[in-house]
Every structure is written in C-alpha cells, then in structure tokens.
Figure 1 (cartoon, rainbow, N blue to C red):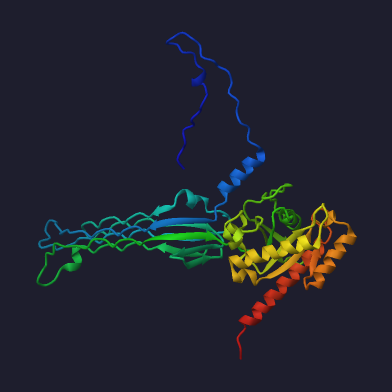
Figure 2: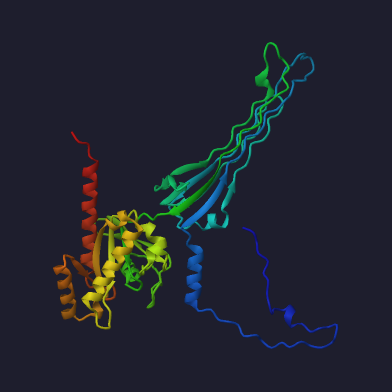
Length: 390
C-alpha cells in the first residue's frame, strides 16, 4: 500500500499571520458540512463491496539462454556450456473462504509476474520467476471474451490464469559434429497475456428478493447471526448480505439478502439488478411482499408480486423458473381479519402465501421448517437425477 500524504485546507498554515506585512489574517472559522453517519455507512459500503472487475494479467517471460564456452586450466577444448534461461512466473487465482470482495483487484487491475533470469556459463540455468497467487472470494466466475473459463466454488480451488514462458536454450544444446562451437542461443518464450472479467456469484441456498423496505434484512437477522444494516427507509441494503441458518440436527442453510428491486431494474434502474447474479446459484427464491400500515390491499400486494416476477424474467429466464415462495412480511402491521382475507385471495389465485413478522417472531419457525423441507427435497431430486440408469 502506498502511503498518502495528508493535505489540509484551512489548517495550521492558513491561520498564520502574514509576517512580511505584519498584518494578521482573519482566523474566522469556516463552517464545515457535517456528514450523517448513515451517509458515511453507505459510502463505505459502496467502496468496500466490489463484485465485478476487469483485470489484465501478464505472466512472466522466460529468460534467454546463454552463449558460453568452458575455459578452464588443463581442460583444452572445453566446449560450449551456456545454460538455459529460467521459466517465467505463473499467475494463479485461488478461492479463499475468508474473502467477500474484489476490492484489491479493483485497486490494482493490472497484474504482472516476474520474468525468468538469463542462463549463465558452466551450464547454470537462470532463476525462475516467482509465481503470483491472487486470492478470490468463493463463487468467483472468471470470464474471457464473454465466456466463462473458471468457476471457483471450493476453498483452495485454483485456476492458472497466465502461464509463464519457458526459458530459452543455451548454446550447449546446439553443438554438433560439424559445429562444435555454436554461438547461438534461444530467447525466452513470452508469458501468457490476457484480459479477464471476474464477477462474484454468491453461493447461497435461499435468496431473499423484493421491493425496497420489504423487511428482507430484518428477516435475515432473525433467522441467522448476520447483522445487516436495518433502517426505516428504502435502499438501506447496498450490497448482498449472507447468513447461515442452522436447525437442531446441525444442518446448515445459507441465506442471501439482496438490495431491493424496483420497476425497471432489468434496464438499469436502482441497485438490485447489479446483484441478481448472486441468486443465480440459489435453489429457492423467497420474495417478500410487505403489509403496510396504511390500508394494505390485495391488489397492491399482487402488483408487487408480479412486478418482481417480471424483472426476474427480464434478467434471466433461468432465474424466473426457480421456485419462488410468496412471503407476506410485516404481518404485525395488518389486523388478523384483513390479513386472512388477503391470504385467501392469494390462495384463490393459486398462490400459497406465508405470513410472518420478523419483529414479533410470528411465523418464523414455520418458515424455517419450510425452507429446510424444500431444500431436502431439492437435494433428493438432484441425487436421483444424478444416479446411474440401469
């Protein structure tokens, strides 16, 4: 990291007296704009979480061979002894479960490995260039020319993005019966160079989607030990949050909370479309539609349900085909009679709704049990489809 020299405006130098004229300058304080803590949190969140970068990698070139002849006392006609060049360093990507952002690569998008050293006399091979290992978060997908070439889903999994060039041969390899003193060697081979795109696709079992302020982050905090930012205004969540839910039997389920979707998200409106890639791997989507304090109606809630469905389909047909649960959140804001009527109308339309309140805990255990049941069924179906057919 390069240190930054602090630069201050209106600091100590600005308040000094003008000694050359003997007159003192005004030292009235200039009003400073105060930044709200939530603004600082949002700015830091945007800066810290990076899930898409373009990088340029250049592996090390191989070292050139050496032209040398053995010159030693009492050894006439020593012959050629030029050594080979060293191999260039590789560039390797490695999955690391302790990382969650591509910020380092965003700050340093160009990576160049060390080249190999030249060969030397006495048949000495040049030193090989050091490899560079770049650690990436789990779920990182590496693409070249819009085609995925690697998917790092397991801790420690590696992908060689750039192969170092081989070293050139020294003149010892070119001696023949008719040319016993060759004066030629090979230059080293160039290292691999390529431009890549790296994006994170979080590995989660269940993804929470919905409009802004639907209660997704609150639900995640009640079901897991995650601590996402929660506030009573839209777009509190600026990047995906992950949490792990555990049942009494010790089974684990990973939940992903995405920023809120709005109408036109597939065309670039809002924040949610940037993060829909994170639920491409999920087995189940849970869409939250919130009750409101001011006259909750079936028509409005049905519109929200269909709006998100349309945005998912516009983004990806595969994403729209995933199993999607209708979760009516913030049930504590709606009287039981009106709530039952809305649930009935959804049922009449062929949609089974789940009512819950993350604030009071109502319906959380039922929802938890439903998720584990659905994922168990998904695992059984996957195992059956992968079993050999006799």
